[in-house]
Length: 172
Image (cartoon, rainbow, N blue to C red):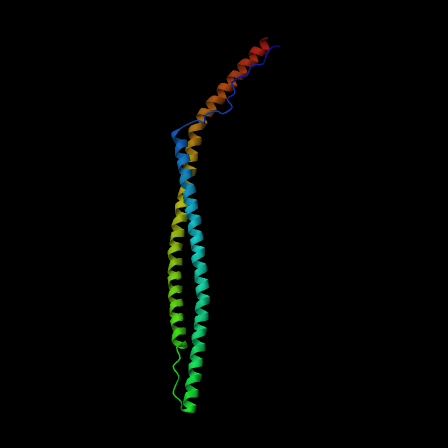
């Protein structure tokens, strides 16, 4: 026997089969990746906002406690002033504690509104990502539908060549 010939020349880097369906699929995959990143960023932002709400709630409890302590100190000072007949000493601690409480409450309100807004952004990002996944699946089905007849024809042609060559070899 002589030299064995290859049925088809082997190309080390065959060019991909180009089609409009594949180009559409590639573009949709890119858009899907962008949508997934946006969804992840929205989730991270929502997590940070929720953490801010928790931290601010803790700060508000502390501020409310400080107001209660300042009120108690003021009441003690007023009682002492009334008992001794001395004038009530002006103390700014209650005003400062109340101002801090209002400031923290405002921050909590803002953070809570941000959470609600980011939840809406998150829902929208999830919807966009889900639609992107659906479009990718549809495009992948279109690519497969376009490729199957071509691949089947190639397989049948290859099978016919193989049968012809077997017959030729058997005839030798």
